[in-house]
Amino acid sequence: MSSHHESSSAHPSLAARLEKEGEVSVADCYQCGKCTAGCPAAEEMDVAPSQVLRLLQTETPTHEDRALKSLSIWMCIGCETCVTRCPQEVDLPRAMDFLRQEALARNVANQDASDVVVFHKAFLNSVERAGRLFELGMVGEYKLRTGHFFKDLGIAPTMFFKGKLGLFPHGGANKREVANIFARARAVKKESKV
Ligand code: SF4
Ligand code: SF4
Picture 1 (cartoon, rainbow, N blue to C red):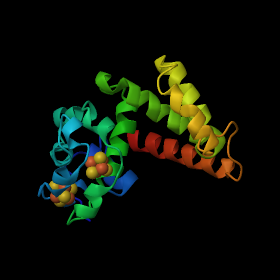
Picture 2: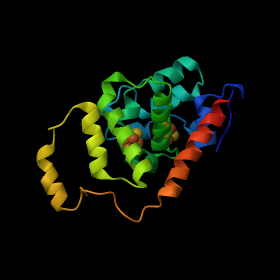
Picture 3: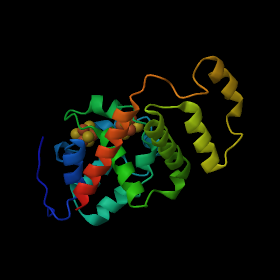
Picture 4: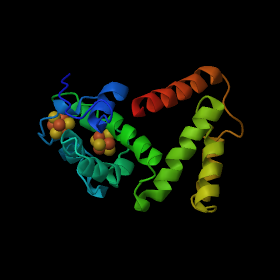
């Protein structure tokens, strides 16, 4: 891992925070473009995956802002194709996840991705509340917040009978441990901003 961050410790750059909080070194990326070439979601993105890293490498507020406001961070489906192709093993999906959380914290998420943003929040809320994903709770929250009440409703019975849509949260989850993980993540985030 490399570490060549120029920003002051009082205002760490996103690259510095990503390295510290997410153990992803954006400096390791040498812009070969293999991640972008294999990304199944690249066509839906406004900034190519490799370019998102390039924006962070500059460690300038304007470029960081561009990355945070991009549609790309919400179009990434976390498939990890990029990681397997990357000669430097840069964990792009983890970087994208970090940027999504940061975009939400700064309230600058791309408006065109509003449905994805709601889905993302509903997913995390469900995991935090139930200790693991509770599909019906997540879908309910998503529909309430987006108003898409009847969209995709036709597939619900099939999912239910295949056991993919439980009526109650799954058992076996260590709720306390998961709640601790969320609490620790919030504490780390708070510390990094001091
Ligand atoms: S494949 Fe890896 S090194 Fe190449 S541009 Fe993508 S992240 Fe950078
Ligand atoms: S994890 Fe995201 S950036 Fe990487 S290939 Fe998949 S969609 Fe593209």
